[in-house]
Amino acid sequence: MRIIRDTLYMDPSDRGAVAAIGNFDGVHLGHQAVLNQTRQIAEELGAPLGVMTFEPHPRQFFAPDAPTFRLMNAEAKAHRLSKLGVQKLFEVPFNGALAGLSPRDFALEVIVKRLGLKHVVVGADFHFGKGRTGSIDTLEELGAELGFGVTITPILSLKEEVSSTNIRNALTDGRPQDAAAMLGHLHRIEGRVIRGDQRGRDLGYPTANMSITGLHQPKLGVYAVKVDVLTGPYTGHYGGAASIGVRPMFGQDNVPNIETFVFDFKGDLYGAELSVALIDYLRPELKFDSLDALITQMGHDCDQAREILKHA
Image 1 (tube, rainbow, N blue to C red):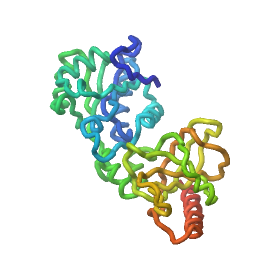
Image 2: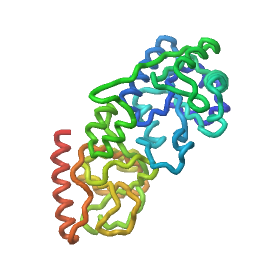
Image 3: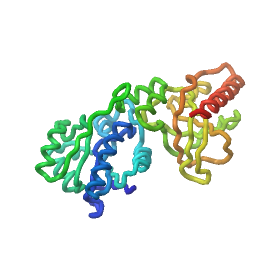
Image 4: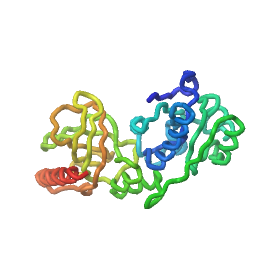
């Protein structure tokens, strides 16, 4: 997959794609329905399959101090879209100039002049342009005027409406399986392993620590997880148990992170890129009376996680 970030100065070969437009946070089943329709049209027109998205997410731009909400960082989203066969990912920089474009100027300047898209596909709830004043009807009118095709994909529903908001709610409640049902894949936290205080190593459970800053915070506690090591000498697939939280036993940090104990692994993961998939929620984060009690509970957590992973 080719990622185009400098959309003002594109290579001519990147023009002419059929592209789905949206934020695609989580790349959930609703997004995948849009992508499937986009793929079908791209094949019919003999054009590359593209996705047009925005970085940073518009909500981050308009409310930088609001609680974090993203299900995926840009890298994790790109990984998922690549797995789904997207050939060109247009990461359009979202800034004041873009936010100030009228719906017509957005269609003319971005879709037509900048990206040269042949056809666009959006969900039924799509809005665009200054103040989100452009609707799907507006887009269809502009497509007819400016010479690009438009397809609208209906909103997908399962037991509950498939949306990033409902997925966040499931994760907040400690229901990663419900989140996965709406996502169509496991919810993953991806990032680089950072150096911690190495206390887990002293306890007999060395962990790979990763930041979750900027991401929606799942329910704090311990999870059974699957771990993909994406870079470095130990690339591969592993099982594990992960704790998302603030380490209440040690009271040193109020910033949550994720610490993953990788089963049956020996090696140095510092600096490696990991993808940690939440399989099931085991228990809340607790403060124990002693380190011995904590170590005993960690053993129970790992046993429970291994049993869950046998059937995952």
